[in-house]
Image (cartoon, rainbow, N blue to C red; front, side, top):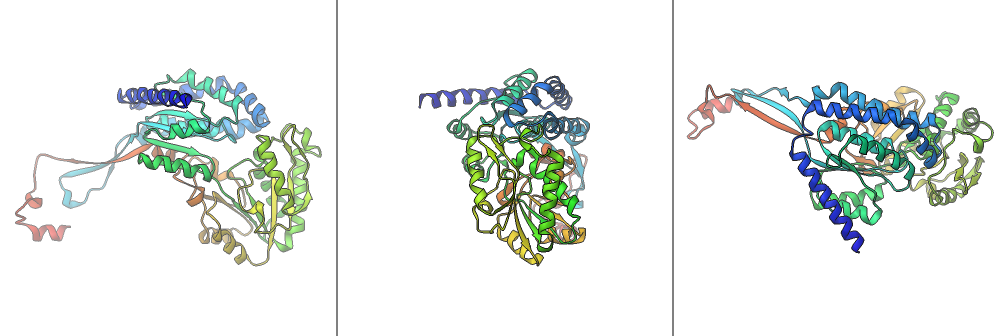
Length: 460
């Protein structure tokens, strides 16, 4: 109990110090924000090798995958903000109705203050620093709380953070679950959380106590439909790539597959062919195949192997946390693997003959973070219009997440709020409405005793 009290006091002091720093207006200057983002990019590049090695230690991500899915995405995000920030941050004039003459109207994005960012372990570098870029771009101070399951990359990130920011501006803390709940009980101006829907509910409950606005980036079971017009080998290659990134531990990975009954056998064969082409015959020895984060996740994934017939794969090694890509056929919609997000390299395959079966099933489940369709584009768009998800791809998977011009986020059970690019800047800002009235004339129409009400009525 004393330890929690000490933690609480330390956090309260840190929050107050950041409030003082924010009140100094040091974060409001746009040129200063741009310079800070440049320093952040420079520090990341300086420590790039260390960062990639840490990702390999925690998740066995190859340097290539670590760079493509984590480091490069943050550098691109920073570059995008640097190029556009001045335009985003200036007041934007909007039209003003005639009855407000002689006034002009503007909208202006102002920083919120002290924000809290909580990130998960699966993309520990990207999912902590991406919202941080938005927080800095918008002019905030930030407290960062990463997952304790990725200790090596946390050390590398802390090196970067302490090199670029004073703690009064941005600080990074370690916290267990109880300490995290204590942290969430404090008053912040904004909370950004990436993680599971289960813990997301707790975060939202804590935020509600202080009426704190928040973004929740959660997950869910993202469906992937392989229709009868699909180019089977192309679909399989793209699916294998998206599903096996980070060994399936990706919130927007295709979670389960509805395959047209006429294509089931050929699709399974194409999956096996493409897995071998990408990772070789001995995946355990392949330097490009990641590992499962911990033994608890391994144990959970192994229970799913009984939920269908293993068509290929199924080999595991607890010591190295190796989980072979596994294709399951004959999966029931009522099985355990179809109840929660898999977050691993298992391909559960179900078949359909009438696409209405798929639409009914998808719409009967919580709204997913992503929706994937392979087949005739017009049919894919028709299904997008009839279903709901945070994002979607037609004839591809995952790639919608890397376009900074698109908002990224969930809907319903898969989250609320959007970020990336301008959407990050806006998420960490208050969109303020301003009316600037001239003083050279003062129309009496609005004042009692309303002598000209008949004119006002016509104008309004």
